[in-house]
Length: 507
Image (cartoon, rainbow, N blue to C red; front, side):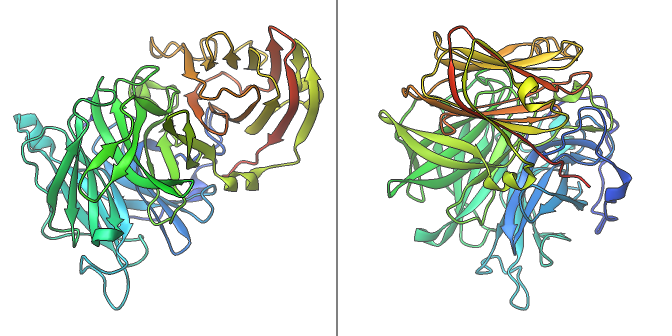
């Protein structure tokens, strides 16, 4: 959760109880630059995904939300649900600011064993753990204006009651003390809170979600430290039967391509201490526009990740009018070993295939210049492009419109890196650092390559080499890109190119 000072009128709201249901008919989701296959609120400002939890066959997505403006302001928790991770139903605001402050980022869990005592009549409660941010304390110069609090729901997340004895974890005097990600640690039968504390991570434990004990700290001299650490996550993945723990740490600024980004560490967690098995800095997404990403809880061994598709460098000034910001496509995380290091991989969730129309497949393309549009027709909406080559050479894929605005995606063999170039992508003058070429290293030594691109009206997501290299970038053309052309400095042999139109998720 990033604090941005913007010119807004700040009013501290009391808890409102139930809000009116959000009407899906009030918006057509057809405005310029509106995502068609990504979640975005009907109107106003959003940033970090929060409280993501799977319960009774529903995925809950809460998010940082300001319902009175399209720029950052007093934070609430917005709310949406989905049966398939793809189609979303907007719901009333879940948590409002109160006398303890704004509702900053956090997480939610299913308290199956009712350790908290919030459950009634055999119903397991959903429990949200979030940061209360006191703007008055911040203004006064105090270092204790962020504290951790609870709320719970007994009707599957529709309504929430805040715990009467909030906060449950008081600030010991750390200015940035926020974004709790809580999970159940089965070997010790206890909850673990992974908390961002200025420039490192502090782990706490609890038996009942109410009383917390400090376990350890991590990261003061490891990883990237170009900015404040935020929005952490901790979970295990399995590699060849071996449990590898992953610690996600979002950072702003200090990303590999400027501004906000998501780094991670791999290692072991014993219920008390996280011990890394490598100390080099690794990034979950090298693009400029994935931030604050965390995973859903209560999904078993499947780890599904979602990020905020923007960057604090320009999030408040991007050229949208009715709303600001969207999320990435949900991504399934895996782990691979490359050389002596473990790498977390990212792939679009399989559920995205439910949007697919009939694909156009082109085989054995041997050309320095190939017009995909002439073969497959113009794209007039979101699509998925999958490319495979037996021998990787330098190449570029240009997505353009008739105004000659374009985004170029490609691979530079000499530098051994992928790139997304949005210098001529359309509206770029709203922020001086937006129009750039961004890069990501390649983590495979194989001759062959497979790449997947997910393209929406105002974004592109790159997944290369089984998800080892991932990039996300947003853009704002004056009209959508409908033409695709591939160029190569040598005779790149594209074994297969599959282009699939994707149906919009909004009715």
